[in-house]
Image (cartoon, rainbow, N blue to C red):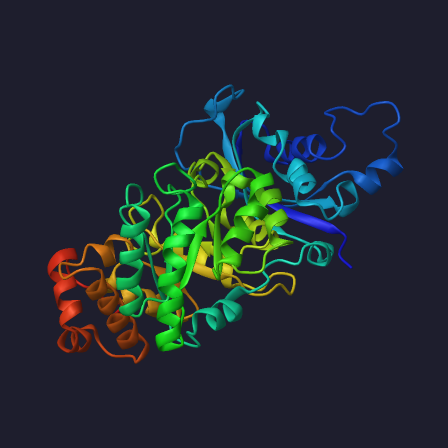
Length: 420
């Protein structure tokens, strides 16, 4: 068994790159910048991190981190370091102390960002990862194939439980697969979690009684860790089939705590993750972080979508989707969740780029902002994605679907697939 964790960083420094790498491995393993008493050759051989590769790269031009020494003459490189598993064991919180701890504060570095990880099998033995994933989610929402089409409750704050129930009924009748609370709607006094559950679940149960299909509703149960289990139980006892947590807010340990107890899929929202990832100079990249979220039990994980309203480029989004779909330590596959500025006109380009329908595609304004109402928004999404999966050109989809044509009138032209 490979008893090492490999961590890859992008760094900038005025030091010789090889010396900078040695500073990192020393600080993040044996914890010293000089040899000290009792730091024997045997101890270093067993516990010191090692530099595995150094590849110099061009500077990106961003400002150096505050307090950097000699930042005016810096160089940039991609470093892969190898950490003995024996330093921390298969524990995600303690792993992070090594691979993403004090290194961000070292003044020798004008930039330092953790961009990837390679974890040994011991982590898969301790952390079971998603309990439901793609297959379990599809079974619960009765969507055996094709993309899973979903939406976010909008407006996110302000709807009464009765208004929410009416909206859910309209969406269910339109054939939506998935509905979720917004990350802003937790357990506030205007629409507490318990009242939302009591309002929504009878609507979904009546729809299931009539049709045999119960759309999945992800109730936002984000809270203090000691409230997560009770919030989960409230949803499950009412017949709910999904819970949502904002992973950066409950932490990986909170997510894993919930995962060990959950009876339904966990929808993993990443609100706040940009604080870790957006800077080129410091933080944790999505490729590294998503592995930790999947190990901790996220059945669904937000990746953003192409043409989104946030900072990520299409290339970064597609890399995130590929990362979530990549096998990880024999874990159950997690569902990539496409969101942010998504609408029916992106279906053909998205499918051409990712080549899979094992996606949960969320459209908030793209459904609720449809000129003919939310039900027409759902219809436009389904028509566009079905057409894309059939390999039809965009023109065929537009000819066949009035709802899609009306969406185009509101949101702009359909995005053609690259090279199409």
